[in-house]
Length: 199
Image (cartoon, rainbow, N blue to C red; front, side, top):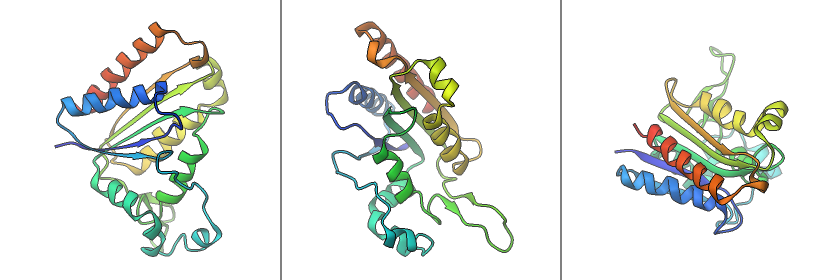
């Protein structure tokens, strides 16, 4: 059975991002998946990496004590899904802070050692990666800037997951000038991409 962890990020319930979340949840339910949701704003997650946490960053397993529940969720999941709005072409600060504080050494990656000169993946049990977002800018402008949010998750986090992971991405661009029709079409894309992720 699929075990899906959703990391959800939006300050307002009832936003279009919450409609994206609900669409993903409905498709997961239809496929019989087990689901856990980390709602960062609802939890008032503190994204700040404090001095003490930074100094203890490499001190495993003590480094994970404060975020032990989220680390347990990451270890439990075989499917990781991010749902968030794109702000300034990238992740909201609270989501970036969650990555800083939760994607730790010996959790998300293994540090270099005497044999290995670079970091190695630590999330190889994650076989499916989904990224769903909205963007105020156009596709062209977002691509011109370099799509840093998309790249951070699909490439940066993706490289820490299983080598042959399945990855899906969907964004509604020009969100500020969206229409009921464009939003409905996007939710259909989200449903289709979620089904493709779960094949």
